[in-house]
Amino acid sequence: MAMYRATLTRLPPQSPVRKALVSTIFAGSADLKMDETGRIKLTDELIKVAGLNGRVKFAGNIDSFQIWDPDKHAAFTTAMSETAAKPETLAALGEAYNDVLRQHELGHYPDLKLVEGGEG
Image (cartoon, rainbow, N blue to C red; front, top):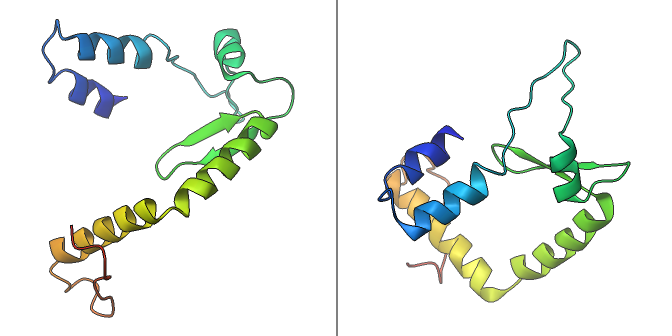
């Protein structure tokens, strides 16, 4: 949330973009606390918005996690797998990979080589 706050406060205060994102991100968020056993309780509003009912699926997301209805997550995973296999997705990954190697001047990753088609 700190990153969202820092990013959004760089936008002009009356910007429609800022208003839309602040309303969507911050107004829809909740400050959840862990109990003594490490559990969190979602608010009724979050449960309703997420369409949760009974069982849930936790999905890792690099530096966070998501809570899903298992059936909705399965459909989402299928759609994302299809997107991941598209040539434009693989090209974007190649560009990002090459950028990382160039940024670190290839010294941090001596055994890795730039990929073709990801010239960016």
